[in-house]
Image (cartoon, rainbow, N blue to C red; front, top):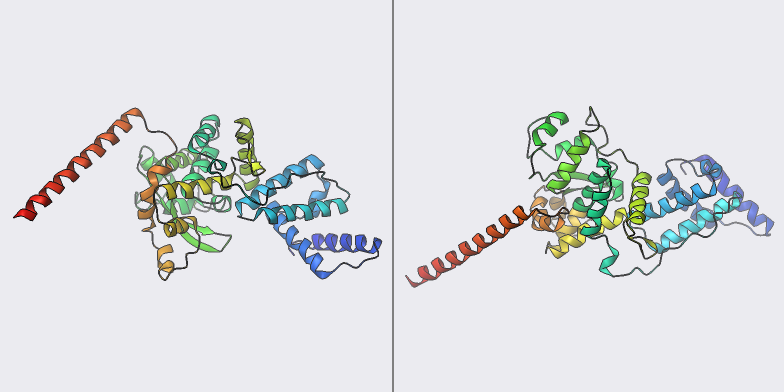
Length: 350
């Protein structure tokens, strides 16, 4: 266990409670509580016992943050409910009553409206003045990265993802060079910490622009600096704030606008675009059971699969001028296709 004081608190408290009831606490029960606390302190980045001095309202908010964290870790709702119950029981042993905390439904809805949609994402982007939060939201929605990965990417890793567009080594020079570019699609190598796995994903040009605009506010940067400085609890808190401010409501007993929802939005948009399921899994950092999987994951050509769905990942609406240009291009492509068809027919007659 990470913190010795937590182990001591758990064992002493549980043994004391059992003794008062004339019972004996089992090792398996202790292990169950230890597992829950280990997960909790990983989220907290401090010991469980250090939270015993917090007031009840602050602890309840922390538990809600922890639930969002577990959702983003793809934990089942039943697992989340069980861990929260165990933590509540431990706090009660520490003479802190957290009261009733809403449980997540065990059978999740399959309603597509349970996920944030483009209009709702736009509303948040248009409401916030926080450039970092804008960049994070766009990055999550268009890269599929989970919050744990988002908060662990370095400036150097982002810089490396731009190698196809610049030869510069200094991040300040790179930002100056790419400032007015609107076609930058980075290919980023990401460490999926949940499975200790490396994979590649991409993000859209609008996301790249948002990240560069945000980085420009931070002054001098080194490769070792974190790309984003917001912590996981701060990101979760911001998502809750804008969910409630914009009245998006709740689905399956949790707020509709939450970080993991953007990861699911990403997968859904690529599915609608017709991207192959295995390629979507690769872009999400899932392990694909395939003979070629070990090569596919390490192959930056995954960008080709990403490009098939990029139009479906764009969050900002195109201007009328751009819409007209796209329509003209589509019409020209159709004319060329028809002419090629006629040429093929004529050649078949000769």
